Length: 249
Image 1 (cartoon, rainbow, N blue to C red):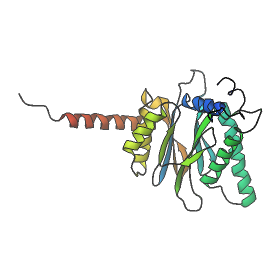
Image 2 (image 1 turned 135 degrees about the vertical axis):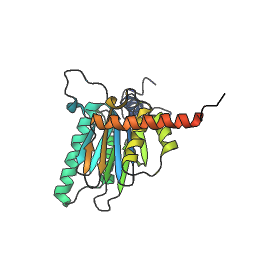
Image 3 (image 1 turned 180 degrees about the vertical axis):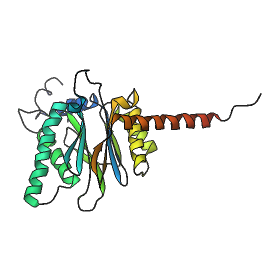
Image 4 (image 1 turned 120 degrees about the vertical axis):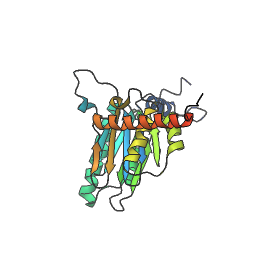
């Protein structure tokens, strides 16, 4: 194996590109991220590492706007993400300037996935060590969309998905609990999925909600705490109902 992981352009005899697989490993070690698509709302949530006491927490956002109607969250190397986000933003602006129309979510997803794939096929470069979750509303039909891309350049559309640390646990939770939701219920489902792998409740979670009318809005920590408290109360009530009323002696 050692001979085949030196260069990005060399396949191993059993058909592996080891540098791409190492990039996928970097994603698995990154922060947890989740996306949930509702009927009128799309939610992105990411695990937030605690910031240093003197650090400005606003400078470590992991959910960003690409355009007025499109947002992105990522898991993996943040420096790589910054480069990819800047390229995607320029493409959104260039499309508006050239075509005089905003990009569709699928178009910008294809662009980002194409850029990631290009960096798996050229000598002297390395793959982007990040996976992205891209959300937005189609500017022509108003239909909400959620896409995921990974370091190999693969992309696909989802109703709900997770990436990063412990993404399998979150995906299993979403598979069991996903149903078509709207408004606050969509936000609750995303937070419940994150709470499967994130400890300490609201202070370690970053949530952004996108609606067609108001675009992307980052939830304040106090708002997240209120929803987390609601979820915990519902969970306690469900457990109490399971146990049933206490037996009389």
